[in-house]
Structures are given as structure tokens and as C-alpha cells.
Length: 115
Length: 120
Image (cartoon, rainbow over all chains, first blue to last red; front, side):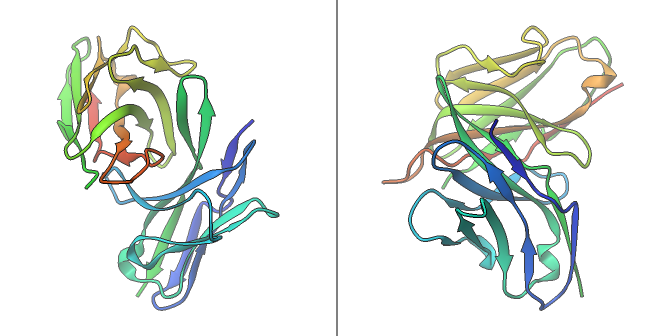
């Protein structure tokens, strides 16, 4: 079965420090991987994706993610966290199915950045 | 580009009434639209996937007759919660994918801002 795991419910980091939000996946075939961010009472905003090519993917707001095939991971990173980065982050994998595709989301990781 | 809107953003209704939620792709044609439901502090649960002009494909456990989905055009999909009950109260989020800009693929989903439904 195809799945996405975010092992941490919550990540706390001080402003200015680097942050990492972990994600591992289980898919058949080549993975399409995504990160989204959700602010309170809002929909999801697309941050970045990995389809193919360079393992290090750069996205919006200074975020990046590294695709590691051997570890089946796609951790989200940012060199220097901002208080405004505090939000709920979802890792997702796109799966293929008859008639099209659908996206499976991890459980989400809440990021708290303290000033 | 790739803006998805939802209307209304918030709705309160009485038990037994029906509520319609609209999802629009504003600057691209959405060949596929998805409807999700999100419970407090939980992840998104896919309810159904719809392709323009086709019947929606519902996930296991989602009642087709209760959650009516229509995707009549490439820019509009609607979700109607029929005979709503308090347990239907939730945050409903739509998502769309399609050709965005020139040379952009359809592999990314873009999300609406969500609709909070409260059934009294």
C-alpha cells in the first residue's frame, strides 16, 4: 500500500535556527512527492515538489526538501526559521490509480517557531 | 497563477437542510477536482475525485447520495451536503489540477481556502 508518514506531531525551533520536518514514504514505482503548508482556517498552499531530477528541491518561502531514495525520505528544510513559518505542514505523495491519480497526505506536523 | 476559490468560506445551517459549496479554478482549467474533509488537528481525508464531465469517483466509506459532487465545467465543481447533520460539521477543502501556465504539467494540486460547515 502507498503511504506517507510524518513521524513528528510537532516540531519546535527557535527563530533563526535551521528547521527540519521529516517525511518518509512508501510507493510503488517512482514517487511524486509534495510539501504543503496550512495556516489556521485556510486551505493548503503548495511549497514544493519532487518529480525527477536533482534530489534537492527548492520551493517557496526559502524552503527546500531533499529526496533520498535509499531512505525513502523527503524531509523539508529551511536554513533559518521565521516566526511566520509557524503552521501545519503536510507531506504528500501522488499515487496512480485507474482513471487518474490522487494525492495521499501525511498526518501533518505542526511547526512552532519561537522568537 | 493557479488560484482556487471556494464559496462560502463559512456556513451554518440547521440539521436536515442541504448546503452547496462551490469550488472554482480562477486562472486555469481544472481537468480534475478533488474534495477533502479535514477534522480538527487531523490530516485531509479524500472524499472524491471528479473529472470534468464525468461522474465523481468516491472513496470507500463516503456516501455518494449524501455528498453530491458535480463537475460540469473546467472551472467549477460543487459539493452538496444533503440533509446535513451535526456529524457532517467539518472543514471541507477542494483542490484542482490542470494545465497551469505554459509548459506546466498537471501533477500539482492547488487548494482552495476551505469551507467551514457547522450544522446545528
